[in-house]
Amino acid sequence: MRNVIKNVLFGGAGATTRFGDLGLLLLRLGVGLGIAIGHGWGKVYADGSLGPSEGFIGNVSKMGMPAPTAAAWLSALTEFLGGLLLAAGLLTRPAAIALVANMCVAAFIAHADAPLWGPKAPNKEFALLYLFAFALFIFTGAGRFSLDKIFRKSSAAARA
Image 1 (cartoon, rainbow, N blue to C red):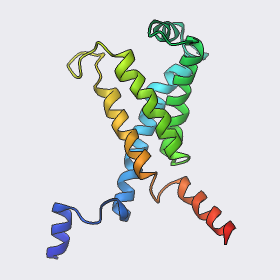
Image 2 (image 1 turned 30 degrees about the horizontal axis):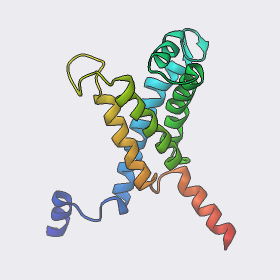
Image 3 (image 1 turned 180 degrees about the vertical axis):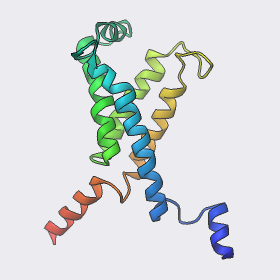
């Protein structure tokens, strides 16, 4: 009993346990669906039609991005499809890399002059929180409760 209390209070095996993988699942679902539904969907399907809005394309153009329409589409699809892939735990690391790059643009270019945090938007806070959460999955992968795990097992079985 004493060891259980110690592990709860001071950590134990961490992400190598089922509880650690459950934590990765919860974070994947939260940030993956959060970026996909809360941010990506509104860019993929804007103003009642498919595709980024003229306002978003204009903002991308103001950032000095080459081919602003293509860059706006890339950002929208990265947030929407990348978020869904992350939530499902499918192609987790590539999706996380693309999402980290997208959040770097959001935090350091789109909101370059915005404060780090504050009561009024825009600020860098959400972009940075998403960035660090996505970066975690580059290092940890999706965990055992993911589609990546199923594909890892099937490819290992095919080799054997």
